[in-house]
Length: 336
Ligand code: MG
Image (cartoon, rainbow, N blue to C red; front, side, top):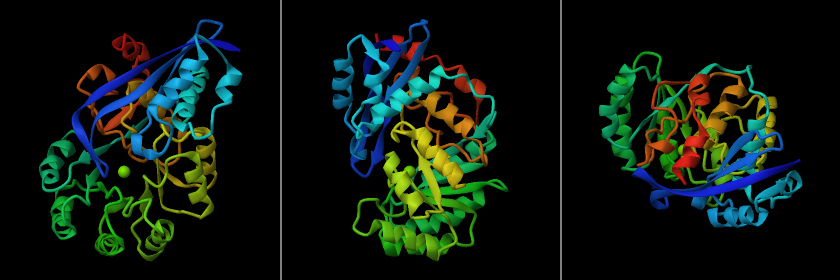
């Protein structure tokens, strides 16, 4: 099987720079892939590496795409270097797009409402609860732990009955700070704490395993899981906390999800701040995955200055219809 192949590169300004441990991130770069099979059917993929996540760069992925030319055989696609996980994820979207639409899995999933760091979060709970959000994700590890711990109960008091709160530290804490938080959260309705300590510090694995064993609040791994090998590594260690999966970066997503499903692991699907093309594929996969209905980490839109690249409008649920309404052709044409 050969395909007619084309790609377009994008560089999109975020509406507000994304604060990260590596400084402000202002511009999202990636590639949109367009494949047309011999029967004329068009399928789409997106290559959306996050610069400091250790996959290939956009330049490297683009160089490979350029080398394919306008006609590419399926064998070339299957012979990618193993570290090109963003490109492999993009091609997986293309292949998945050729398959018949699934009718199993969820018809819709809830979405976690994003709450900014600091006291600003308190003001945002009520309007978001009013439109129906019941899972909230608060960014912590930005101000001092003492200040943020003092805010925790004020924030919990504002949540509607039965709500869940996720905390995302983005690896900002040391062991002692993580322990203080885990002690405090033990008798509070915290769904999980995401990445309490950084993935790349010495002894991170033992530290995370130790914290998970010593406290009742579950821990979620996000920055610790980039590519398929990371997920497999943590499964082999018997990690029983949450796995935060960014579908656009994993590489062999189907293989990884099969293993997570067999292990009955708790999985949360999360945005890699990709465009609507990658989000469509990732959200289809999240609905198809089935299992317990956990809130999606997709409370990110509107995300780009140019809204033609955004996924579905921010709402407390994402339904299959919302996903199927995305037309990748619009994104493609916006890049012409
Ligand atoms: Mg996170």
